Image 1 (cartoon, rainbow, N blue to C red):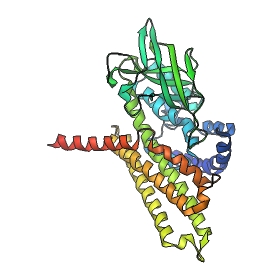
Image 2: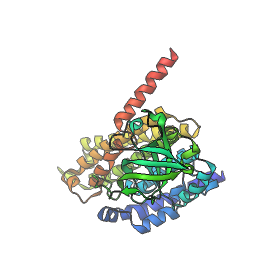
Image 3: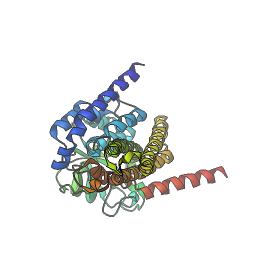
Image 4: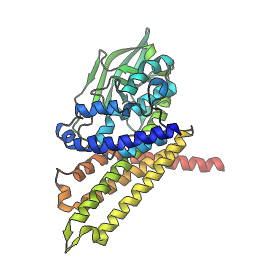
Amino acid sequence: VAEKDNFDSYLKEIQSFTSELLIPNEDLLEEKSSVPEKVLKKIKDIGLFSISIPKEYGGKEFTMEEQVLLTFEFTQASAVFRSIFSTTIGLCSQALLDYGTKQQKDSYLPGMARGDVVGAFALTEPEAGSDAGSLKTTALKKGSGYIINGHKKYITNASFADVFLVMARTDPQSKSGEGVSAFLVDSKKQGIEISLPAKLLGQKGASACEIIFNDVFVSVDDLVGGVEGNGLKAALRGINHARTHVAATCVGQAIRLINEMIPFALGRKQFNKALADMPTIQNMIADSYVEMNAARSMTLEAARLFDSGDIPALEISSAKYFASEMVSRVADNALQILGGAGYLEDNVITRMYRDTRLFRLYEGTSQIQQRAIAKSLIKNYRDRK
């Protein structure tokens, strides 16, 4: 009961934080293309970097269901705010929790929980995205460590991360994921080049960079778990963690879009009546709400299954796929309801229309999710035969 009261209290705190600080700073974020320092400090102070990390490392240790409920709230503001801590609470910390050595956990997780150590997940390459097993970055054994060479692309938070979770091939002869290992690499190490953040279509202020590794030496102690060949396995739970959070983010964004489209439809009059009283507009509002609520239910179900221990990959892919497609449709409905005003650059609907397009691309494209869903269903059917 005490833990539930604690979570309920924190949820209300995040609701207030979103409405009183995050949303009012969206315009400044868009203008400066960076998260204001006062907002970043508050994100750390309020504990959003710690929501998934166990209490023994200074975290809040919320369940996935609780994390999803929180995400529904803070992602009603610009999704860029979430991106600041998303890689730390999901992909990076989860890999450490699942496969890291005691020394690695003790070294990184407390700092991650405080927001003092920001992680970036370095998997994607110019020729390896959805096909993670084809990556070309190498980490070759030399003396007491490894030499990393390679090129990473579209790496979220790379411009200000303290540590990279780098996927690199330790077995050059292997052409599959079995020869891939995970390394914790200090972002300040000699031989690392980080590009300026790319100019993005949406989510202005989010950081996505290229990273070049030129003969970067890392100690054997930086090999996650101390075992070669476990890189993609170490990433698996983190990737599914991230996909669940992306689905929840899409729900939060859709809630905000619905809350923006209704007041406009009530205030705008055509043919002597409010747009909100026109059946065609009502249909768009209704469809938006129903689809948002369906995505919400799918995401919560995936989160509950995640909390049970096994990775519910089918349910997570289903939620991520449906929610990311859903929020684009809701954004399109919102823009359509606004009419010409929806095509002006200086309004929230236009920004969110651009921002939400990314969700169908990262953490596995819609096509990758469809493939995963179909393969899982077909395998389950064959296994029953």
